[in-house]
Amino acid sequence: MKKVNYLWIGLGLTCLTPCFFFTLSRRQLVLFQCFYILAIASIAFIMHKKGWKLQWTVIFMAISMVVKIGYIFATPVWVRQHDFIDFGVGFGHGGYIEYFYYNKRLPDFDPREVWAFFQPPLHHMIAALWLGIQTALGVAYRHAQENVQALTMFYAGGTVLLSYEIFKKMSLQGLGLFLSTLLIAFHPAIILLSGSLNNDALSLFLQIMTLYFTILWYERPSMGRIIGLALSIGCSMMAKVSGFLIAPALALIFLDRWIREKGCFKKYLGQYFVFGLISLPLGLWYPIRNFVKFGVPFNYTPDVGEPVGSVTWIQRIFDMRTEKVFVSLLSNQDAYDEYNIPLTLLKTAMFGETDLSIGAEYITPFANLLFWINLFLVVLSLGTMVYYFIKKTAHIKGMLKLFFLVYYVVMMIFYFQFNFSMPYFSSQDFRYIIPTTIIGAMFLGFFIQDLEIGKEKGKNRVFLCFISLMTGLFSFSSMAVYFLLIINMG
Image 1 (cartoon, rainbow, N blue to C red):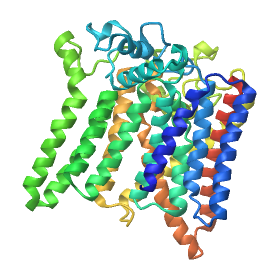
Image 2 (image 1 turned 90 degrees about the horizontal axis):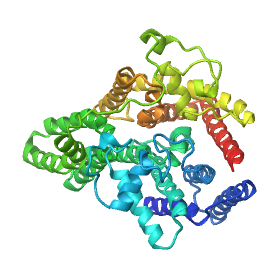
Image 3 (image 1 turned 120 degrees about the horizontal axis):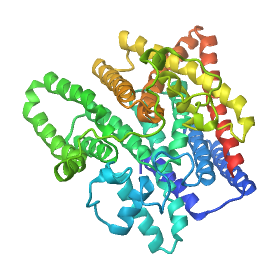
Image 4 (image 1 turned 180 degrees about the vertical axis):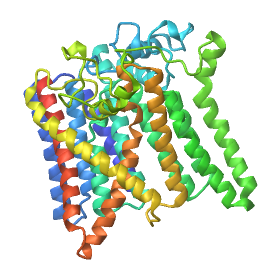
């Protein structure tokens, strides 16, 4: 069995662990996390003693799962959610899941009539099935509801693991592979998604799976790989419509292969036909059904949240004044609802749509450190992306560079268009474009790898140490913020 299979099995077993511990006191929660860290350290020590090569990247990915487990234990299903509300209320994502659990069929009414029912149903059907399996095994219904977070934690952990595999496929190794993976493993947006019960976590997981299968197929086109690609993008769209954003970049990859290998015209025509035959029905059946039966527009999105369209577009882009690293909201007794798009993007990437310092002021120093280090790393990663898009490099072929560039740009265009067409606070959340982080971390990894090669020749040692320190501090401060949040809530 390949090593990657062991990693996936380990991830699955880890995500099932919270299902056996329904409620933990603050002290028990700390002890539980300490036990996990001690277990990881013991395994690493045994490996070292037996002379096995330590996979530090894998070890730190495992430690990041400890943070996610703690976050799930300390986060009830109604806390820091997006349009979830709760189970038992009949609307929101919780009501959507329960509709499938109780009725075992699609809604037979206009989905605009009930909040959140317009969303594609893949996540909600899987969650309802998981609820049914648990209750059939005798698990109390309220506990089964909390255990739905085992699914979202698997999706979040799977996103990290797929990112690690993508980085390796793109020839990252050594410090470049380690630090890039570290950024994703401890990224706060992914920690938050591990406990978020709407469809964001599954959508992200499937989007990154689509990235992975795209690289696999481009590396060696085959019918099996394009079927995997078709399933991943189709299911991504069945989890959330924004899964289609990779399509323009994917079309370029398909076109490039077709042009480069003109003698394989029939081979690729057959593969593309199969791709469309699988992906289009999977991704489009639900919006087509709703349009035909109820006249729901394909781009339907309801108005939601605090309106921020009363300020000018110049203020929404350039007015970046702020008093704190957490979002400002009138509901939190702040002076205004956060309206600046880039600033909200940076804040929600680290802390979501919540002021984590409310009731836990000791989080603030670590939050400030995390925010400013993230800003430095974002600027650096954008710089490295521009650098490698211009410069010829052995790290990444020309068409793959264009693929990542187009995907990144399409996501950003979609994000800003969405913000101006739907001028609400929640539209600015970073969760809509998390794949940009994986792309940015990969290009930062290329840069670190080049610096590491230069260091062996006596160059760039100081800069390499500085970037390594910043990445380490990012991971530490992220872990500190969310560990302290867990302790405060536990």
